[in-house]
Each structure stands twice: as C-alpha cells, then as structure tokens.
Length: 410
Length: 167
Image (tube, rainbow over the protein chains, first blue to last red):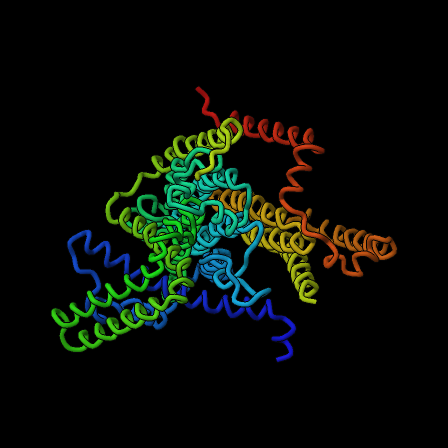
C-alpha cells in the first residue's frame, strides 16, 4: 500500500498498460476474424461460420490451437536468435501502441493521469518511429536464424523492403510535422480541430498545402512496412513457402502473426493522428451537431437490432443462444452509451476507433483485390516513384509555409 | 530512486553488450550485442534529459545503420569467426584496456565532474526541447551542420559511383 501512495504515476501507468494490452490483444484476435470475413464476402464465400455464431469464437479456437501445437525448433537453427526473433517482433509491435493517445488528454482527477494515453511524450512521433524502425530485426533475425533457404530469402527481402520504404514513410510524415511545428501527438491533433476539412489531409489552415499527397504516400509505404498485400514479398507463398516464418510453429508463429496485426494497428493509428484528425470528431461540437454524442449508442443499438433479427430468423440451436448473447451485449452497451455523461466521455475513443477501422478495412480490401508486385517492381516503385513524390510533397509544403500568408477559417 | 535503478540496469546492459560484441564468434550475435549497446546508450541519454537525441540515436544507429550491418552479414552469410595467432593479441590488449579504464575511473573520481555525477545530476538536468536544439543547430553551429551535410552528400555520390555499372 505504501508503494502505491508513493508512486501514483507508476501504478497508474501499469494499470493503463494492462488495460491497453487486454484491449489490443482482443482487437488483434478479432481483426483476424474481420479480415477472414471481409475477404470471404468480397470473394463470395462465407468465411468462418462454424465455431460460434458467424464464426465469432474462431479467434479463441485459433489461439487455443496455437498454444497446444508442438513447438518445433529446427536442429540447425541458431537457438538464441531463433527464440529472440518472435519475442522482439511482438514486443516492439505492442510497445509502439503505448505511445498512441486514444482520446483527448482529459484527466480523471485534477493533477492526475490522462485517461486515454499511457504516456504523453513531447517527442511522441519520433519515439514511435524509433520503436517501429527496430521492427525489421524480428523479421530479419527469424529469416537468418532458421538456417534454411526460404526463410533466409524472405528475411533478406523483408530487410531490403523495410529499409527502402521506411525512408518514404518518414519523409511523407515530415510535411505534417512542419505544418504543426510539434512532435507531440495531442498537439498535432489539437491543431486540426473544427470541421473535417480542417484535418491535415485537406486543410489549408496553417498556411500550407493539403497533405493529400503525403497521406497517399504514407498509406502506400505503410502497407509495404507491414508486409501486406500487394507488398507481401517477404512471405510470398508461391515463391518462398511462407518466407521468414516458414520454420516457425506453434505459439512462436502466432507471435509473428500478432506482431503483423499490431503493426497494422500502429500504422493506422499514426495515419489517423497525422492526417485524419486523431480523436477529433469530423463535426464541430456546436448547435445541432451536439447530438453526435449519441452516435456510438445509436450505432450499437442498430447493431443489436440487426443481431436480434438475425437471431430469430437465421440462427438455430447453440448459435441462436450465442447470437442472443451478442444482441444483449450490443443492446446493453448501446443503452449505456446513450447516457449523456458517458456519451460525451467516449467521443474521442469512438471517432479514433472508427477512423482506425476504416483504414484497417482499406488494408483488408487491398488484400482481397490486388495481386502481388514482382520484387524488382517493388524496389523501383519504392525508390523511383514513392521517394521522389514524398520528397516533392515535403519541398512543396515547406515552400507554401514560407510563401503563403496564414489562412484562418472563420 | 527509479532513475538510478534504470541507470544501473542500462549501464550494465551496455557494458554486457560491449563484452558480448567482442566475445561472440557468430557475426550476427556481435551485431545484436552492438544493437543492445546502442539502445542502452539511448536510454542513458533520456536520463540525461535529451529525449530528442534518444530517439535519433535509436532511429539512426539501431534502426538504420545496424540494419544495414545485419543485412550485409546475412547476404554474405559468414561462418563462425576464426581465431588465429593474431587473436592472441587480445590478451595484452585486454590488460592495457583495463589499466586505461582504471586510470579514467581514478581521474573521474577525483575531478569535479566525477563528484557531480556521483551526486546524481539527473534530477537537476532540465529537459532540452527539440526547439532549443534546432535553434542552436541552425544558428550557432550552422557551419559544422552544413559541412556535415556536404560530407554526407559526398558519401552518397561515392556510393553511387561505386555501385554504378560499367558501360
């Protein structure tokens, strides 16, 4: 007890980390469900359907399966690096998320801790890039330490790819930082307040140019950084079996899988913060727009209504019971979210999550739609197109800041 | 108290990493140990109130330069490091190194800077903002800054000339 009173900051941080870890892990699991479902529907299939109603318990079943599979270590592998690689990948992927503010910097008590962010660093975005720039080691080490030809090729490809695209990724973001003049996430977001055309992707507010080019460059480079289709060369199954994680099984494989999804969430968060106004609502909180506070509750109630109709008309047996539970959870959550103080309090996280989900859906959509690049195309695209364009965006933004007078919206 | 513990842990990690860097016979293990040293040093910068340098240290050294090292080692796929007769020079080298270290420790202990360090300066150091740093860099130290960028440009041109195909 003494310790808790003496170190309130530390204790608050640990509690927030535990809560965030739980939420992120659940989100990772259900992101795989969302991805399988969305791709299945795009390809006119059903996707997971049998484990739980609409396959809702599939992530749980997958997790248990990963835990109980035999953990094989190849005899020729370099033990230290082989075991270190998945831990490094997952630890870096998860710790990057700790820097993200999920809502406004409100405090529960005066002089207390911010509710929606674990830490609020003045150099938040630099720290995030520092952590994500280490992410390449997980993949490279996994490829090398397996001591097998396909993983080695996959690891080499991914190192080259991640180094190449990291340059464009970082430069495409500098325009926004120039406009805002800060590295702090909350300040970056606060500068974009107002209508949605004040967000950096469209704004001419700070005497700059809209960062739409930067946004597109960022999205493209981010897909390559996270090794997703159409840039998933490191694990191209037609050429490399499974690339860098071919020799991994059981939970070590699951850790790479989770790290990939954690990285997806991180880059989506960063895109949201830098270009799409972070936790800000697209509408100002005045007049009739005050009713937007009831959007989360209304959305959940709509979901509950859909689930309820689905329960009655389509589900049979145990699935009907499970769907009824989902209906009740969504309905109860929706009712709680309609209570005005709570409705006002969850506005930040609600809009943040909505924007992240939109970007994640875009990712999944890309995966279901586009074929894979050839390796030389990938490299020439990164260096000869993406890098010059993001550099041009940076120069243009810098020129605009100097030459244009500051425009302020009324 | 907590910064002190963090300092001890990171200093120990940095020293352990440096020793492992020399001892490891597998080049990749050496590279990993060097990354550990870089990251531990970055945390020490943070304790000294220089968060910007911390981030840059990790991004540039651990995230870019060492990735290239690891990449090159992976491409060339070296075997284990060979120990030759010349390697035996390491023993007198280690003795000389230890002597030098003892001497530095001795002088630090007796100099004022050493006493200031022992009294825990971390609490008194104000956090230098990135703005202060860039103002210094672009006014007082503008010439060295520009000279460095020209140096880097020359290095880029050199790499380009070396990598260019003969035609």
